[in-house]
Length: 314
Image (cartoon, rainbow, N blue to C red; front, side):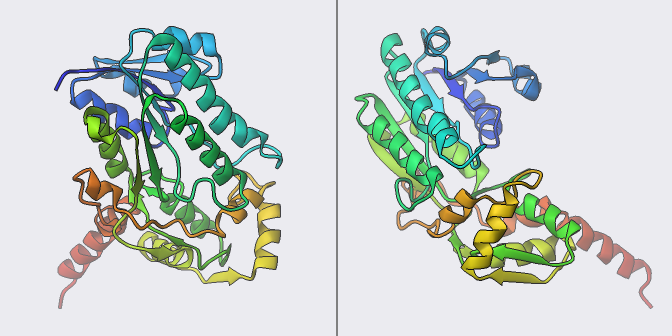
């Protein structure tokens, strides 16, 4: 396999922090573009990784960093925005994608890997609508593109299990909107592997891959399991839509925006797929049960309990 020169947008984020070392392990040279290179200095320790300060919305700056590259990977995405008119989503997803496509064409970078989301282009949420519009721009670009549509992504430090564990630690009871919404959580390591494999296999060009885990679970099941594993079991109350919408409106003003009106609209659609994109790439999806218990400390607590029982037996 010939090492490639790759430019990664969003490489300091949740997926990027796993993908960049994975690409480095294959011998590639990676340039990570970030608004704040000091945020993830550990990536720059890798000998063939360079983390550069860059406003990725600046076409001229993008062109400078893309010059001489073999491929671009766009991982940039947001789940919430300031305000509610969709302008933040449009800037992060649609406008940035258009700017990147133009910069790729201007510099002769023909290969583009694009992060998207399951159900992109469907429903009423700005998030899904702009993800879908960005996909349309990529498909019409005439570049050698590959699009990835993951369900909710889990792994150490995620915004799913780890976030709910923190909420459950603080709250005596947890009311949740759209408790019956269904997901097929996919492991972040599998997502990184999908990008790495697709990058070097020409047959993935022009294809969209749904990245889903092996189990479909509801939001209520996710929260209850999180409470069990984290040692913070709490009553979980599913809210009717009227109250769920009110919770979302209030949540927009809370620290960290635990839920927003746009999140609520996204939850109206199940984040599940019917095509095993990981399998199409030769990847066996990692079950949540192999990762999440250790992630939330359940394995450590069970080991401590076993040691306690052994020392106090009889």
